[in-house]
Length: 490
Length: 95
Image (cartoon, rainbow over all chains, first blue to last red):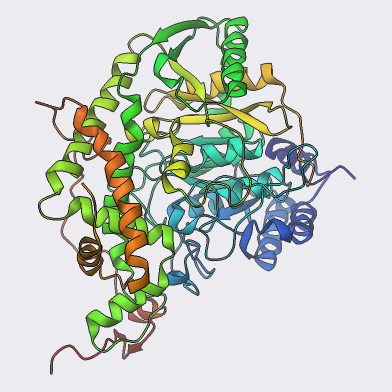
């Protein structure tokens, strides 16, 4: 029988379509890999029984010749930030431990309706706050990759670190992630997979545990660009339950892949050559430019002058929104409750012991920048700079169709290497945050290896709601890069 | 602006977040660093720039003000740390 783990989603779809493999066999293979790789800690909750039930239902549909969904029988991992009916959803926080949602998020409901099989809920940074998956209450996640000649465990990036590790480690055919400032793209780059953040509004936020509502966006994490396009098709679409959901048709993203990049204008922003970016990343960026040019695209120099202010802007806006969103965890309606002398005491004790240190830090920053006397100086100022950052992109897109940058300033780092310095950790997202603030679609494509054998990603940013052009460019990049390296630990 | 112990205590109170006494100095240092770092935004000229609250270029949709859901108190309270008769239970608020 064909190899069933570490395959692409498209390969899985073909195997199911030809009848060479059943959904049950495909699910069993992933369940086996999930169990064999538990030391990576990619999953908070494994749901093998549910996976086998979903797979059996898919096989029955296929046998009866019933209408099949675009992801019928495809085993997926779900980030533990998506509420799943009847399955514990924790956001990797002690405060939500044991929470079993009585409802299903819109994105996971769509994936179910498309016929997919749920393998389990993946680990993440607590409330998606982190860039290394070290802030999870349920333990850190390991990257399946190791530096050459060095056996120290590396972080998978974050916050969708469990999802990235699960895809990279061959435990699923695709995984959902969420991205607020880079939480899909950065771990994708660290683990050598494709991570895509759609335009803000493309995927419904309903039923996703909220972090920063003006930035949060769900997206696919997959082995290939084609898989990304297929999976996004199953996640996207208008939802009246999300007030910022875009009421637009979902295009056939997979059909867009064959478009090529001939005469496409690729913007190269001068300001992305930031201090601290390592030489290998700079060299890879040069290589990426050459690949797209060779494929027929035209390179255009552009300027995004407010780039250096994106990260500090983000670290005002995201904590401000988080401090407001996380006010709901008060020990009354769900999750943890710690006793107190009175109601306020109960709130304070519950929140004091339920949130981890990074979440606590961000709630305090958010509360500070929103507090009386500071609101104008910090929050309002950040909202104005955000407008300038978005305007930079609007002006750039008068000259180009897609923007090419590196995804991260460096490759995956060792556990503990950056956890003592919050700002050093925040700098991981310096290249991904601007597109988040502007709400633009962006994708990280694995494009090469560092000197010590770790994957590096290139990053493309598209126009709002033009994921099709973004996918076209990403496909060209993937074709040229021919990235086929596999992690040693997988 | 430097964030001191008293400020941490004050904002922790606003956030209803119990912070152990022994963590106050560390937090004051960390928050001072982060606030000092974000203050680089002061150098950006934002005169006449309208603040951006959302990238979604749309008007919020209206719907009829009518009940669309409900009648499921058991589901709503199923995850409550303490519930009685389909209601959330909290420590006594009124003496």
